[in-house]
Image (cartoon, rainbow, N blue to C red; front, side, top):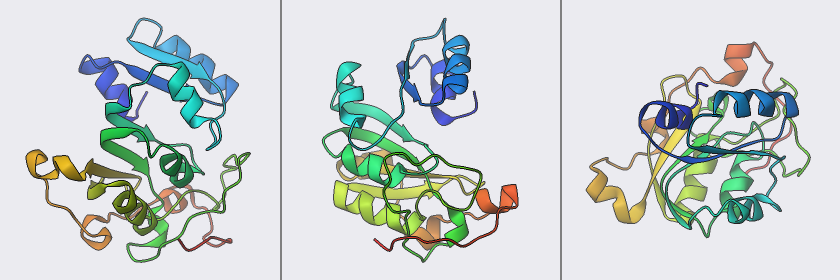
Length: 189
């Protein structure tokens, strides 16, 4: 109801695929989008099945927007979708790591966020992955939750300057908003 793709589907005439792995949340998703041009899929996403989910839904390899917000393996899902060339990628990042640290959780195909401090990836880790996949970081939202990337070949036409994580960074991440303690074990990509 409040994500980037929801706005585009509800108010701008876009169509798309929305995937939800929690049965209760999926029932709400399907109900909320029943009359809208959204295909809703009830399945848990991991890097092993994400490509087949998109293939079964006939998602084109060249698409306008890819949004990834799964509270955990976001980094690995984007990495697994390297064959998909979205014009714009919106991916959740964890701003509590600050703009300089490059961290992500260890991949676990069964990871479910438990309202703790073990989730996601830092902005710098995602920027490095984006570079490897052919994307430029162009900004983040003010709440420090979403990072926006434009495909390199579209950057000049888009009119946005590429930014470093420090230039794009906004704080107040999920740990601060939920009063979750910082810590835990993370990898350094």
